[in-house]
Image 1: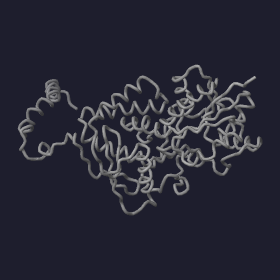
Image 2: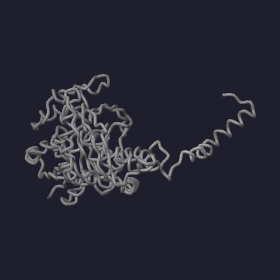
Image 3: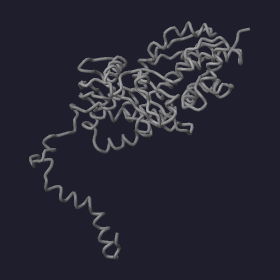
Image 4: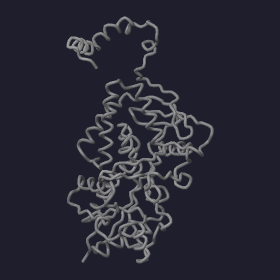
Length: 406
């Protein structure tokens, strides 16, 4: 009699390597591994063979990079969302695209369950499971870290060694890392103490630290069309290729390193170091173009909305009516965010160096200090100030009448 199948979100790392054995031991399922390639680079090399050696009956390596950049990263970029002022949501918006692939393969394979290796203390368990529930609530979800007796990465290494499982890490290299085309995160070990300065020389993977970056600045131009980047230094590029090029440029100059003690959704604070070189450049560039192309009210509302959008993405609520509606709003807002931005990359900074747009709302004649434009006269300011300041004047008159002192 054929066994039921479970689809495992598989990275080839320590946790998912031991989960294959654990699932077979505890559920008697046939394990189908799915690795969503969202830009991990060489981390996907040899995964299919490794998964089968560890006990999986099949392993899919799904190339999700173009979908990820176009349909998850760029909509978040348009929103301007930054979680708690620092985090550019690199792990957060990668989870729904992977979850969708898991559900698609589960349907293809006729699987009854999906399993993930997210810990019971982290955000990813929420992100994966909310996405799966939104896409197919009939699928059973298995989360080993909330069930088994393994309590630490050291325990996981011991389990692997005891059961003869190929172990991709050792007890001397226990940083928890997550990498994709947008960023790489580093957590654990010495970073768990917020007083410890990150050991950048050995920690960083995507580029140099600002201290060791080149002493000479480098200029880069980025072209946007309706809020989406389309070219770097005048060269038209697809979304994925464009991001890869900016990652290389930003990494070279130490751009995009964030050290943050963030508030996890599950209630605790967590300290991590994020590298997001290309993303940091894009956020800096689109912001400069918006200064030119968006009016004051739109910019103000967009900044406030970006905070809520960042929380939706961080909390795993990608496949929700609110997130979809907000993305439609940002698409509308960004229709005129078209033009070119010039930045100077130097020692960890992406410094604004110029911007231009055919939809610019900046009018030099109006903005000049002279009184040479029919749309704006210095004399008009007096009446405006009188009306704008009328509530303040009335309140001051009331206080004087009643003898109220500050």
